[in-house]
Amino acid sequence: MLSIDPRSATPPFEQLRLQLMEQVRGGELAAGAKLPTVRRLADDLGLAPNTVARCYRELERDGFIETRGRNGSFVSAQGDAAEQQAQVAARAYADRVRQLGVSPDAALDWVTAALRA
Amino acid sequence: MDGGAWFISILISIGMIVAFALTFVPFCARWRAHRHAASIRIDLPERLERTVAARLMAGSRGGSLGGLVFTAAAALAFHFEVGVGNDSQLTGLFIVGSAFAGVASGTAVAALTGSRTISPDRPRVARARAVAVSDYLAPFELIGARIVVFAAVGVLLVTTVVAAPGAGGSLFAIAFFAIFGALSLALFEVASRRIVDLSQPAGSTAELVWDDAIRASSLRDLVTAPLALGAYCLVFGVFGIAESSTHPAAMLVSWVVGSIFALTGLAAAVYSIATRPQRYFVDRLWSDLRASDLDLVADVA
Image (cartoon, rainbow over the protein chains, first blue to last red):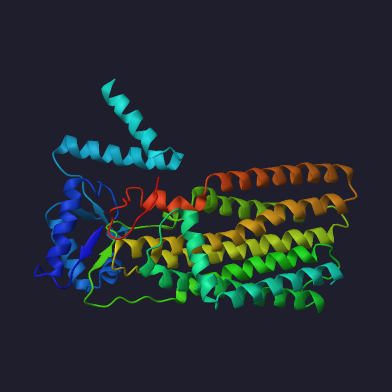
């Protein structure tokens, strides 16, 4: 969840950038997650589209997100190469679990068991 | 148009008029909002009660008005035989099908024309990841509607090619439901994407949760039309072929296929009720919702 307080001393651009960075670092926004379009996020948060576009550009420059042409912006995998591969695999597993209609708890139990095996 | 079809038309019209009138009664609006809150097991904060009730009522108003217009138009078309035959025993079902299409159209218009504004000095919250129609509708409904309508169009093509002689009325039934089912699916596909693409200005998590709840409700109303029309085509249309067919083999095949469709539809309805699809968006978008999230006290267990 993102929140922008117009009365805060921190500029809206900085509030948005910091929150997105924290959520990517903390794993709340997983690698491969699609971000809202610039226009949509600007409308939702009551910001100018240029502000959101600039924020996305800076996050892309810093390696937090990547733009895949017209498909939109996505969260990049973080960490070293092995960690990045693990995050991509985790995303693929989560997508497959959703497709199969398996509950998140059961999916977590199985992956925990597999890791301990 | 026979007496039974007139009776169904009048009954649906009265129901739509009553539903439309009730949207202007504040008590009904509040009751509807709290009933919806209970069905999705999300508490409705008192300060949001009026807004949520008004938005739910706007959707109901559009749906009932659309249902009334389509029902009246279908009844008049069948009565004056404007572009449709008048010899089918299924006219009452055509009227019901038209009502479904009307409710979907009215709901779509209401969902797409409503606007929400937030004071510019208020804090704003937004979701950090993109959402899609599949976040609001269970796969069972979303994919089910496509499968049912494609199957209905397939049945239409098959029956047109291998139609038994003298099955004109039944072919009309299949064609009517398949074509209206396909049109309502096209309406759903376009309108649902536009609804999900609309911005969600929200000042709190609770407002965003309830905006999602209203969206999910509108999308479920929209998807009901292609599901119902496609199912009508598969069940009543195929049974109609069986009854009017003079060829024993075609009759047997129609009965068997119609029975399979009817049993599948029944099983699907039971499964749908058991899995509570109205709460799907909560599990998908708000699975980590906590009672401490701002002012929202939620029972998401």
